[in-house]
Length: 185
Image (tube, rainbow, N blue to C red; front, side, top):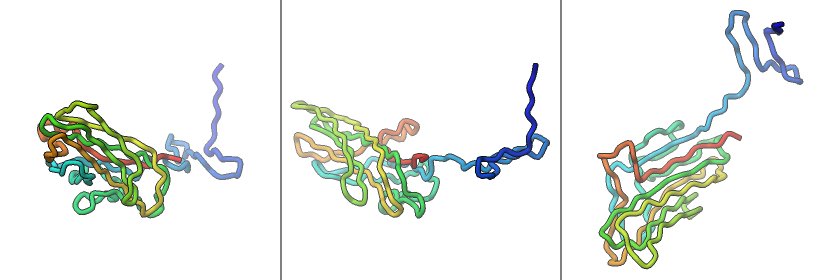
């Protein structure tokens, strides 16, 4: 036996319509949409030279996407939380360092409002390497007007300068990138 329920409106306990139908199969929902925005991701547009043993802001000049035009890809290389969009954000990024065979370590740091919030380091421990790509991801509680930046650092045995790596040959496999998205609460 088949059961059929026919209604043209479903209400919550307060009498508010949450779903309605016009009888022709078209539904209207008054439920809030759940989206993880604002959101952005950016990458390097070229290899960025950096000084040895120096905290350096990564200049992510290529926007992959920016849902709310909140990422500055030309001057400050930072994401600023738009008005009314405070909340918890997943913040992520990676830097790939590239130098001669003398790196001791490479680090990546999330900065919030100009200060270090969290960091991650790849350390070669009493030996050296030529490339490292530390990754970082944290959930950060942000208010409107707060800003995020990504910094990196590389320490070498010789004191020589290094670079954050960019490869145009591998445009789909970006190795130095930065992004964030708001969590649905």
